[in-house]
Amino acid sequence: MSEKNNGFVSVPGKLHAILRGLKFVLISYIVSVALIAVLSALIVYTDLPESTSTPVVKVITFFSVVLSAFLTARSSHSRGWLCGALVGGSNVCILILLGTAIYAHNPLTVSNLLSVAIGALLGVAGGVFGINSRK
Image (cartoon, rainbow, N blue to C red; front, side, top):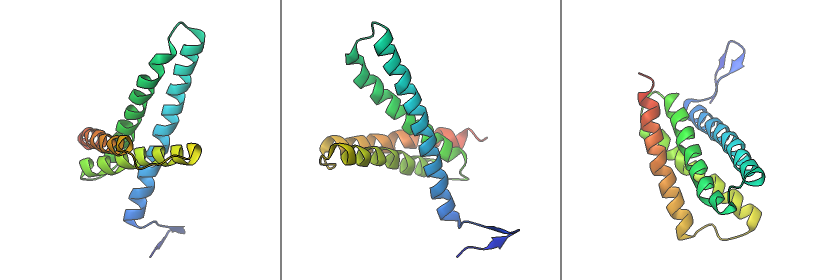
């Protein structure tokens, strides 16, 4: 399964790719939390209406998807579109599962399935940009 190289245990290729994708999803979540904190501060300390929070949070979430797909595909050697789609869809699925765990609601709704599809499509775009930015 794993080989020893120079005293370190190497991770097989596919597992390494999955872990790399999860690392970039985590980075995109950190960026999202920071941006949402800025949005929250703007709402609290300025005259920005609270009604703007929902669309802005959606934009931040989709930016997070594109960012994670871009970073994953950029570190990939080929098939950036596929890496992006998988990471984008996974990114949204993780958010849906976290929301389900916190709010105890049904995760299989049309809205959630549409969000996963949009996440995968945005992931494809981010993956294409990421793989082509290496050149």
